[in-house]
Image (cartoon, rainbow, N blue to C red):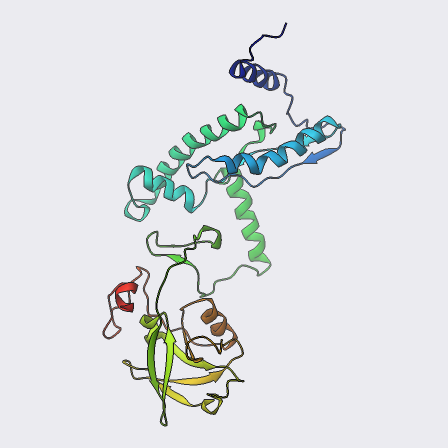
Length: 313
């Protein structure tokens, strides 16, 4: 007989135990049934469980159940992405420390202890929701097996000459003192201002408008648009960078925005992504102004040692 009042907790617990004890979601090695393999991106272990986790895996879950009920031998493992900056930051927040201030071995041990706690919470949530993955194949991106796969993959790239050393600009966090991925960046819109700066040629003064005046010391050229009749007579001339009194060339490039500022743009290494593109396409030399702590290099006149915002002001 069905109870007149549905007890969700009791019912869910009952069926969860039934599915587990009867191996309903188990992948059968050696089975003659056609294998249907599901590879989902493992969730990042950063201490934040939210509705987005549920939403993103619900779609795969429906497919897994449908394929299983239509006779496929479903291979559906589940993993945890616990090898990266989000996990490190979680440990730093919880322990109120910075990884750079303690021995690497001690920090690694803290990370392993922390992710073990959170992964149990993650697993409990997925189990309570009835997700039909096979926990016998659970993996971590930091476990020994995954490390071995990554190392073998790297060695394979090395043998094919596809792994190499190169000096190149990267996204860098001055607080963590490490490079970061594009996916780890949060973008915010903020109001700022244009600073009008006078560059001098032998014949005339040129005004450029920039949001990054602190990078004057890294200026490598001025660009003008090849169709901007106001300035094309300046092609291949030299101009003097104010305050620092060194010369840079004036070059043409179609990526200049004629309507922005004065129509003349200062190229530095590096103020923005366009600077990076010009750096590559014109094979410029790199001039470094900002150190790894996020301060202007000490040897720069006037602003050496200041933070970026202080130097800009």
